[in-house]
Image 1: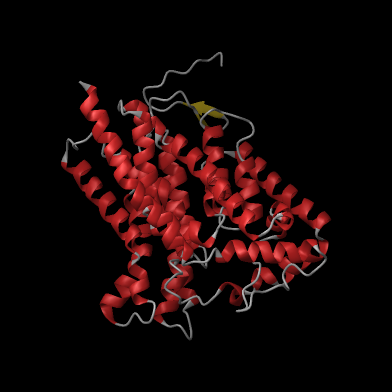
Image 2: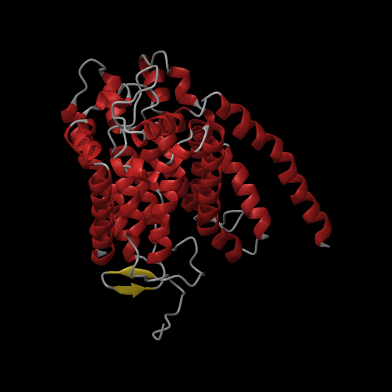
Length: 409
């Protein structure tokens, strides 16, 4: 009886494979693995005794990450160009496998889906997202950092004392994940927050010992030089500051940006605290990823992979299918629209100009998705409510609804 259904599922996945191949092979080739080329060139130059932050490409782009990132990438110096690309793809694939296992597999188990089919279909859908395409095509580290931070979600749900290590290491590699330390503080996870801060300081101190000159240069010069990362008004910058800069590229209104940032922080703090009170750690993490994209001065399109967990939370809130009430149908419609916009590449249509109302809306299309998620992402029953994970809260453990606590664990 299940034979025809299994056949249809196999045919669906096999039919999507050519699309996946086009997305991950042909389209990324147009990005030329640019960012992994910067890592490879700058780190190789540094390992051979050069100035890490003095090295640049032919068009002036250089290494912009903290020195611990260079320490982490040091093995690149021993690899030629193509083996470096292969190693990066393998690490990215491992990160995606972990994230799908953590975020999607509980849904498959809870709703009785065939595991291989759910994960394969989700992988194909993931590949369609513009931020994912750009992360792979540029050879960026974003998905690796998301996996590091979400390792802490896995640890928090199990009450582990190691929770916070992944966030701290990710923050030492790139500044955007620092917002997750704020999440741990706002939600009263003092132990995990302390662990994260300790891991970040320890990793940065290690880099200071191994690369003292680069560390000094980064914290006294490179960190404050926004010109190194590109023009703020570029449509690829889908942050609040990017929006403000597009309103007046010559003189971005920093006060307006500050007001918008404070509003985002207020909404985020209220919503993540409510999520944790309800035992919905996954919504809390997803909201924090959204806030990080909005608050960062520069949020390139590839940084928006931090929105992927929010899409999962949004879709999970509509289950089981078909949706049984109007609110769930609206959420499903919102998820479809958000996914379609993030796949579309719409912002690039306005790369040469964004005048008028249509330009304002289109050039900031991905930012509107982020704002919508921040405000409307549902919080409550966790997506994996039936799995045995527990959520640490204020020094204790609060189980998701419907999960009995074994006091002897």
